[in-house]
Length: 497
Ligand SMILES: Cc1cc2nc3c(=O)[nH]c(=O)nc-3n(C[C@H](O)[C@H](O)[C@H](O)COP(=O)(O)OP(=O)(O)OC[C@H]3O[C@@H](n4cnc5c(N)ncnc54)[C@H](O)[C@@H]3O)c2cc1C
Image (tube, rainbow, N blue to C red):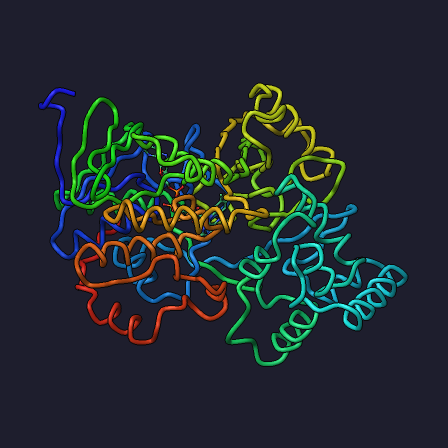
């Protein structure tokens, strides 16, 4: 590599999604510059906003919700008054009936009819007497223990298997513990009863009824962060795919991207772990490569349909449990923010499909996918296909890191290698740490990684959310750590976009 293609920076960050951008932001606030390398033509990663003919859409709708004060502060410092507070309405469509989601026990039982409702309650009572979710090793046992077999089959099995593409009994119970912790039939009854009386002040995450959302979609937040960084001398290099990581004694030495070799003292990566290890030069020992290669992902396709109809349904999104169609979820972006559509006479729906990269669905042509999405929308009775004027397909590889049997052991092997051989490389974020998370977790790992570089640590990033408690009780930082983080936040003028 020629020397004019060598660039140096104190910190090099791979990937400009929420984790990478937040790390760079935290460094910039403390006067430390960084360089971000991003393969796409825009920032935001899975939290970006795409545009087609002026219609804006997310990779799945992105609620901004957190219990972590420093994350919320950054959102508001960067985006000022650009957030809307949106009411949440998301229902399950099953058997031609809309059920409230999160499940409202009274609505659910009413929707099921008296006979089916009685059978569900009997099955729930049986589960309560014979099973405990604490002993559950897999998702099926966890859900059956919390809801009973009959409700599990009606409301969880089809949808979950659409999302993950594998039977519920092969998914680790940890998934449920992290994502829908605290949710059970009993919690639902209690929360519903409370909301009917005084309102609940400490709702379980899946029950949250309001959320913030940037006026122009989540990408607005990340574009504003990019502008903040570039104004302060931390460039974000777009269209720059990282292809090689050279390491040796002492850790990572250089990173290659787009014909340029980058040298730095500290590196952070948000790249999927499997890809990161595959690009290491020299290749790590065989057992390390095997551990990285064993990590799996679920991929995702959004078919955004442009529809000549101002109002379709009031929900932000619908869960489609109907086994007769492949679509798993439908987003109605206009109900996230009215500014997601350029003309109020139109709506834009995101028909969301879960699949594996390279499978028959993934490789179906765009025209066929659009046609299928139109047909399924019509079949569900939500909108006649004649009203669909246009559509666009977006394929998202590695949207979900999979928690299968073995992923945890693989991560332990990799962590040991990283800490002993590559001490100047920190893994952060969702695929960066193989963590099925929300933006706030990614951001917090980025923030803490920056603080480690700045000598304000040490923070063990793998411990953030380690006991799966974050949705309900906040990340498991010690109270002293939280206090220190909040106290030492420099004031940042807001930069509305
Ligand atoms: C369908 C869906 C719905 C979601 N809904 C919500 C929600 O409602 N609320 C919420 O808070 N979170 C939500 N999330 C999660 C949120 O999207 C993630 O937590 C967040 O985007 C992760 O940020 P990250 O920076 O860790 O990773 P990413 O967003 O994945 O960013 C990683 C970046 O690295 C880049 N990259 C990868 N490989 C290379 C390479 N070789 N070279 C250069 N760059 C590379 C990618 O292009 C990407 O920009 C959702 C996610 C999905 C998939």
